[in-house]
Image 1 (spheres, rainbow, N blue to C red):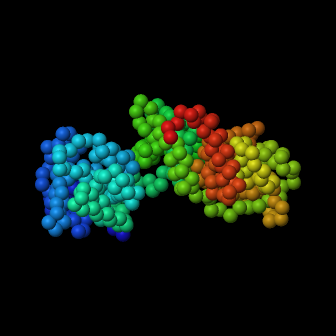
Image 2 (image 1 turned 45 degrees about the vertical axis):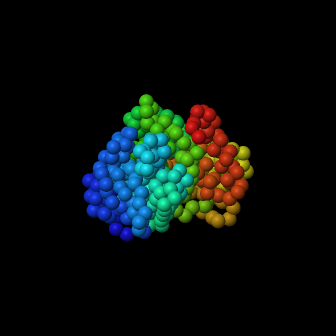
Image 3 (image 1 turned 60 degrees about the horizontal axis):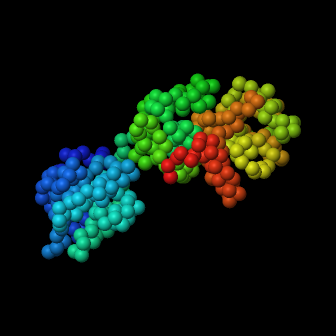
Length: 368
C-alpha cells in the first residue's frame, strides 16, 4: 500500500472545493469557508451533503492528525458547541477507526476521513455508515512502536514515577535507570526519542502536560505495554551449576561480578513482588552467555538444569533492575509484563504484581 503524508489545511480546502469529499451515495458541496457560527474558531467549512433530492447542511471541523487526543478534542467540541438551526456537526480526520466511527454515531455526530470511511447522520433524511478502508497515512513520528523494546522505557517510567517536572528530568530519570547502557557504554536515550515518545503518549491520552508531565490513564498504559510486549528470541542456554538453588544469586554475583551484565528474568523475580512457586531454575538475561557459562563453570544440559542463560542486549529488559546483595532482579514492570504472556496461573500472579506496582508509587493518585 502506498502511504501518503498527512494533509495540510491547504490540502483539505482544495479537496473539499474540488468535490472529492464523498461517501457514496452521498456527495458534498462546499458552501463557505469559516462559517458564521456562534464560535467560528471550531468550524473550518460549511458543506452541503446531497443524496438525490435530499440534502443537509454541515459545519465542518477538520484536524490533520488521527490521534486519540485529536479525535477526543474534536468530538467534545462538536458535542458542546452550539450551531445555528438546521446546521449539523461534521468532523474530518485523515483516518477514522471503526471504534471512532461507532463513537461518533453514538453521539449523533457525523464524520468522514480521507480513506473512504465515515458516518453521516441527517435526522430523518438519511444515515450512511461505511468502514473497513485501511489507513493510508503515515504519522509524524519515526518511532514505529513506543510501547515495545527500548523505546518502551519512556512509557514504563510512568509506572515507576507517575509525574516529572520536565522533559529533561524525564530523560535523566530514564537514563539513570538504564542499567545496561550505564554498564556497557551503549548509547543512552536521546532527547529526540523521549520527545517523540511523549508526543504519542499525550496523543494516546495516557499522559497530560501542564505544570508537570503526569500520568493520566494508568489502566490504558498497562494495557498498551502488555499488548505490545515481545519476548527476546534467543534460545536459552541451560546449565547445571553445582550449588544449592537458594545460594545461586550469591554464587553468580561472586563469580560473574561486573564482567558481564546480568539480570534475572521477570519470571525468576516473581517472589520479590508476589506469592508464587516456580520450578527451581534461575533464568538470567545476559549479554554474553558463553562468558557467563565459563565464569560459573556450569555444565550445559537439558536434564534438570538450575540456571538458564538468555543472551540479549535489549536495554528494556535490564531497565530499573533492583539490586539485592550484589545480584540484580528484574523490575516489577518487567516481571508483570512477562507474567501477562502466560497461562491463567501466571495471569493471576500478574494481578498481584500489578497491585505491587500501583501501591509502590501511590496509585490512589492515578486517574482512571
